[in-house]
Image (cartoon, rainbow, N blue to C red):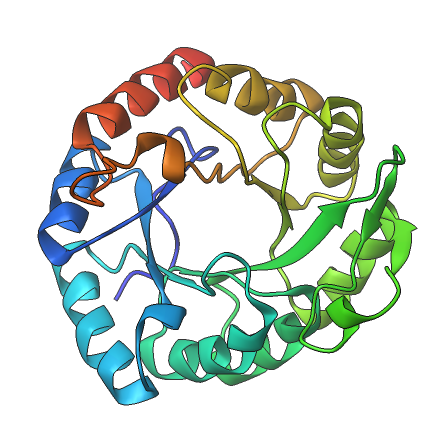
Length: 246
């Protein structure tokens, strides 16, 4: 089983939500395999139900499974860790404080495990208090460099920068990208990314020298009627990505 994402030109891999097994297959084909399909743990009543269905996603997409929390819900952190241990996916979404536990149960370094940090309104600083308890208290504001070092200590692969609100936090995002490049860390911009701002957001990371980029494009490419991620939009995102890296 392949546990490493299929990056385009060894640099960029899309991340979108899969509303069904069929939707996952269509998006996987539209992205020519350069994609991770997000399936949210929050949508399942228990571990058994999640594992049963997520295994089907793995089989249908060469294990391009991204285990999600569900709108960054910190209360899903432990469930995500339990699922990751059994499923061994290519990608796991985690709150900052859940990264160490997830890497430990995975027992290998290939699977991408991100750690969620949030903008603070101050360039060069992020909030790492994104866990079940820490998110209920005072913000844990540290430099982006410290956040990356801590994640590296815990076996994390990348910074999940959320919520970006598109380019509302552009200067902060640029500082995050520069730090990821400096410390050889992957970057996952998330929140408010659409077909209009996608290229600029990814280009900022590329220009900064980030080696691995996993942009999450969610609600903006979901059909509100069916709940499906639109394969034609995924195809367009791939075209833009090819333009950036080729």
